[in-house]
Length: 220
Length: 220
Image 1 (cartoon, rainbow over the protein chains, first blue to last red):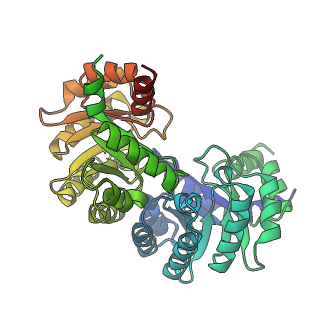
Image 2 (image 1 turned 180 degrees about the vertical axis):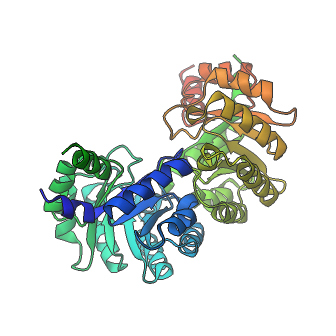
């Protein structure tokens, strides 16, 4: 297990609906100490965190989160707003509603338009694997590839299930060479994070992995 | 227990992130048969449902849902968009993040601006009781009253807890005379709905109460 590698893959995350400014401040402090890939926080806190971190750690936020069933117009507005607030990375939730209604072109067009709105920012597409059939997961791999998103991401952490190693295998088989994988939801310790990295994941969304690494370092 | 009264208080609700167009169609059909107060559905489906119901049942949708931590600008855009799509009623989630950060004026101003954007549409303010202290619940009663929202609503149904009769008592003590109460989250049968109505609730959000009433009527 390579701790440095794990840290470099972590989106240090706090998306609880009752997270306070103080909680976000602590998250920023931890990020400044350990330099994870990013912090992932609610849109409400993006501007303050960007200002506080001053370019030292990228700030990621979430769009259409966690249910994905806002209108396309609202999601586009939300992305532009987040980028205006200074977000470096965008984790969007697909319209699971559209997918479940068989509107595959809508799902593709939505991601494509958000891709354009993101310009050079990193775009991750959350498909919420626990709610999808295997066929739908494969379809989403194709759509995310077509729409030229940077990442396919397993889960929001707010649905019934989280990241599964079997889904990483499935994604690897069906995404294009330019799409990376982010695993999130239920990854709570460095050992689990490492298993996902070994399976081919480039980013890990977790609220606890970085904290556990920090506690270990203080103990030893 | 007065079944007609219960039906007249129900916001017949389907907010699961994987609800398909067919699921929403069934919800609309049930609403046309039983005439509840409204149907409450994701923004994604508002335009179709408004067109399908053709004014026979009001359409309610959700804003900043369920976590409430979008920016104020994004929530305002989302409300205007929902009204443009034809929504008759708006259930917004407060910025629990701002409340937990002690930014009470922000919470009040946000609701006030959404109130203005809603104009004559019904505005319900979801405070997510299960995440609040008693002091915060009382504060929200005052803020919702000040901001002239139509309803204070207990829960999204997506947090750890739902509606509690003790919260209805608390709300009744602290809201102004023009504010009504909507209870939602975990109200699954007509008996429970009736207990909340007797406690002083004017609206009930539930995905199952209307269906159970319908099944009973077919049995007898």
